[in-house]
Image 1 (spheres, rainbow, N blue to C red):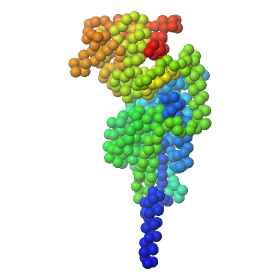
Image 2: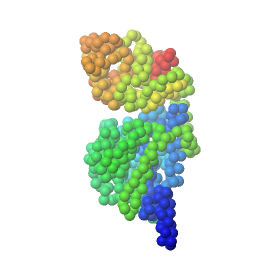
Image 3: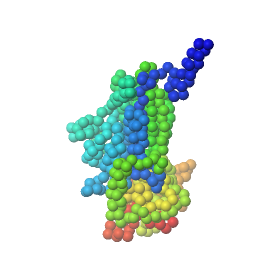
Image 4: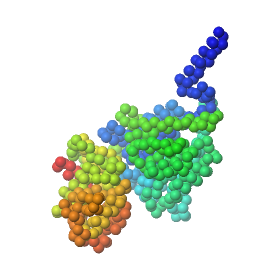
Length: 510
């Protein structure tokens, strides 16, 4: 009987232990829990979609909740935050904003670490240095370096070089500790003269080899295409987690034992990664939760105040342009698709609307209109009541619309290059153009393209200046560009002075 009672007590103890989420033989004193709050590709500090999704003040609330649950919480952003944004295109107190608003908000949130994204190099060198020095958070860069006057060296923050790798130490309440190694790599998408990229695969390999003897396990911040993330996971099968960016839609996959995760852009979602390390068995367990950031989450008051300050600065700048951010220009039943995954890969209804607006704004009948999909930066769908502010966010850089007479052979070269640019900002959207893939034929305004004919084309001035990817040949110096007509700078009623005004005027007629 005593033996039976003893067995029942043992069984009861085992049952309670398993129910609480602990394995029967595990001791909580030997387990150290680490949490990573992971964001990527954040360009907007305020909520989107009429306040329903996103918002950095809501991220701050999530961070505080995670810290309350686990003091071993690290908040990080896997690249792309200084650019692009609508606010960043304006000036404040005589200086270009270009990411200053984002750094200030991230500082207020309590960001711990960031990796470089390709859009960090959109800003000028001096402005990048200013933003880095303004930041309170840590920067990690394993393969991107500063081409400084004295030679290639790490980027620095207030004179202190960015580390290539770092080892983070965490303890539990009993004093048990774990050392987590971390590195960060970025793809060489923006090749500026002040930045030098080492091969990200080789840099990651070297970083891991350096970290392995110093820590218990390794994680990484990556700003790569998802295909390259998968290759990296195959190369480094012992890395536990790749916290990625660059792709703007959430994803999670496992390559071998390596977990690759990316959240949605603009903090529509974040990933919460919980890692548990058993200091006795040396085993790591990982769970990852994609968490929506929406209007069910309260805004952190202090961060919301800073966001509101920058929103007021934005409002004043828009008003100065003579635009009314609250003016409803159209009510749409079908959303216009401005997502990068769409507009940089195929013709979308938003791309069609912008191109048709350009055609309509032309000073005389035209054969077609083209523009670069990369000029659309909202990375979202726009529907319902569309305001002037929405249009500003769709096309934050604005820019003139010009008309050009060009030979058909040049137009064909431009259009073929646009197809080859699929996946990047140089992919072209158009009006009055069709393409027969099977026959490799272009139709312009209902007729097959004639390489010897002269065409009247409406396009952004940015394109005709040869500034787009692989389209450097498209300039007024090209002998096949016969004439360029620009809007009259003194005519305030000429909407061609700004593509945003072109689109607003067009939508108001729909």
